[in-house]
Length: 187
Length: 268
Image (cartoon, rainbow over all chains, first blue to last red; front, side, top):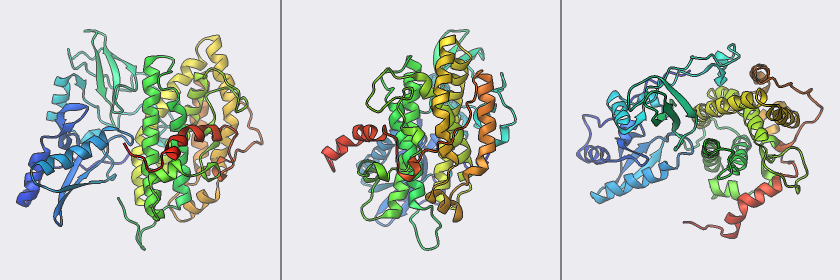
């Protein structure tokens, strides 16, 4: 498992006025599927750089095939253009996006929105096939931490489906308040 | 994007195409379940699986297109190459059916889907893990993302393998039949192509032979839990990686490529 020394990006203190303005404008952009957390809080927005006449906005994709990425690029270019800034979007793959970057305030916003925030990504089940855990032949029951229900807080929950309404979520159900909910999968 | 230059080591284009083609073709296959899943959750799961695979294919094609230049794009590579130019594992192109001729039609068999996804994602988890150490920085970055996704594919298909194998008499019988049909195709995992040898030689690829013991252990443990019996290996070695495909490939490509070829350069 690689360490992720990376965290959420933010406007550098010595940013030029133009770059600082871009950071401030982009702070209004949220994930198209999760309109309560900003692109920056999710870790998608990585950098804003001077690039000649234009500004270059660096983003990193979440899941390889996430269909929201195209929308996100369009949103960035349009938002900057509306304020007279010319922007291009550069996609950077490394370091690979991780849900571990998400801050506690962002996690709290997810919870309030009804999505259980992700556990740390190193919590994997023994059958996930990493050579480091191959010696555990079978999935060890209880090896995965319980996901807390965002509605009532109960840990008495069960996974309905590994794959949910978007690439980044799984479907869960609370066995106490009986509400179904989305779980943001560790990545 | 990493622009190639004289000092940058990059994977042979044929190796990138091999990885991309396998992801795209299996993504296309699994997408056939969209709207036809046995239950709603599986419909979504398989659509998600395809989304990941096609996303991985796009990243790999984009990388290959940058290296190729000459107007190559992810779309020209996916839609305007012909069957002998595709370098995917044969197992990825087989239909969701028990073995039958290419023109025969039957109901999709979910057991075939599950067993294939299990055998393939078990291999890909190990391969992506090895490719984290690729000298090609862009390929290593793609591996880092793909590994996270392949682990979910493996977890999902392994769970279903156990449910079907250790389920009812009928589900066990179907899972065993699917395993008997598909396991011989995994011989291709270990039969290195020229592109794979070239990639290993310049430090950008992974030697598959080194993954075999881990794969065997992973598969055997899951089969034991699923009460399935591993059939004996045969002498058959598929040749999709060399561009010689099964009779099913042409039908798949026709469906996947016809729209782009009827409306070249079309946008929407």
